[in-house]
Length: 220
Image 1 (cartoon, rainbow, N blue to C red):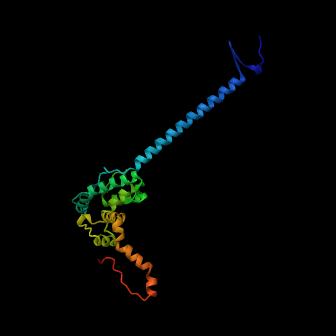
Image 2: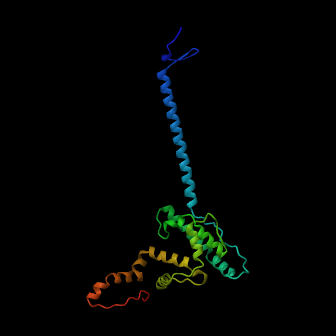
């Protein structure tokens, strides 16, 4: 018995119509597309997970002085690192907590970015070793330990009675304390620099009224 070629495909004992073959092919293609979509999704989720894990700050980053303590300046740097080590780790835990809560009050968004080569070179020049996984903000914090605090920050801390002495008086710690003051609503209302700025805003009106005044934001 012979069958027309267009009716289907003949194998021993089997007759498969072309319509069936076409439907089966479509099903196979759909299954393959679905499988590829699942694989792509899982890959993206894995990359996202790895990416989010790398942005978490390394609070266990080792802060060590790679220079010999006998070399000039090394002893002073070591004392600064030792005096601020635990405080830095607590600050980094605070940064992680704020980022996890989605409420950054004391830290800018760039704080969690990857460190720059310039930062790494700067610490290398200082003879300080910090973990390669440490973020941009962590590098900035360590660099600031060896910098003088900004004069404006010093005046603000003095006004609010915040005292930092010796190895604790540095740019990083001063900026941290000022950021805490700015995040405190009560302190914001008493901020002398905020008052000074408001006075400067109305200076033209005061001048027209013949009012004279002096601004000394650091005087209680």
